[in-house]
Length: 407
Image 1: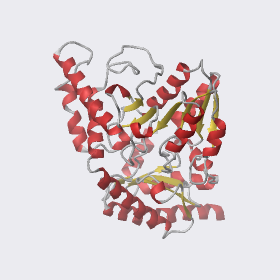
Image 2: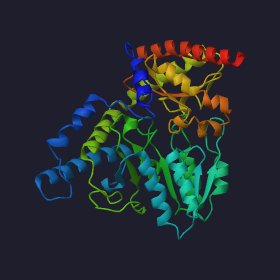
Image 3: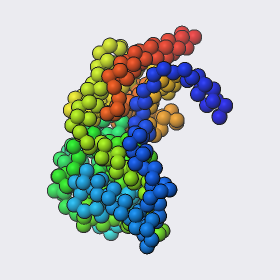
Image 4: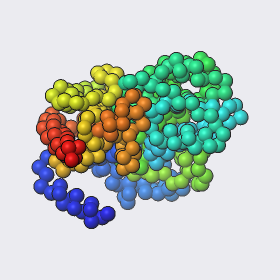
């Protein structure tokens, strides 16, 4: 295996232009974020924030100051509403499992959309094995949740509803406010959770205005370090811990806090929300340029998800007919364009994206999809290069497929 990887890396030598668009899986961390983190590894606040000595007090102060920045960006009432976790996956696990077992005496029904990220879907399947009833609400051809089906599904036995604010694969901006009103109208004690990882830093998102009970956010999706995320827990909402151990500043997640990563998360937050409108408009221009450059000039292609303001400003997901997505990602990579194929979390299994299947894409369309996400750091020249490379790569893959079919 390692020899094959070395050969693939060798094939990439001499690239003159590289464009990283795989923000769904990981991000390039800006220098400002890295520089902000470095002192906290060995120079300052390197202690345990629960201990009574200078490095511990420094760590406590640093974590509180970082929490304040993130809390402000989320519209929190108090710092205690921000609960750090190792990432989006862990925050979603905490939200669902923590709620399920804290409210199991009130009911055992959980409602989610059928296009939630796997860290919600798989946890729901796990809870089903523990006696909870899981209802998955369908979506339309653009990925919007069916609100009438949601209304019918929610009842007095329902304890939790989870609907992402923005779909991670196709960028659909869901009607979360309307969904929450339906839920609370049925039963005000129900907990409403949203994975806001793909909304945070991309569209206006405020927990106080939206009035959700729980919200997941991720560091790397705003170009911060991996290994850190947060679960917003509304003041007055009580959920169970899902891990046990030493309790520090984070009551819902035991263990010694990752101070450098928390600092990096806060710095990434600061950068994401500085000139927010300008950043969003820049991403939207590049998104539309990329979509128009492919959809308007190539044959047998399909845009997955909605257009315009109904779509996250960074998201581009396109299916290329007669093209296998994994082969296309490799061909693009050899030319310095880095994207993901199908569902980022399942691509190595070569299974079609559950999101694309849910919106009605055929397996051949889902398999031929690629996901690209732009950032405030991408340039017009980057997108010009991508639009130069994609048609050539698609033509080559289709040529190979055509030759195989003829044989």
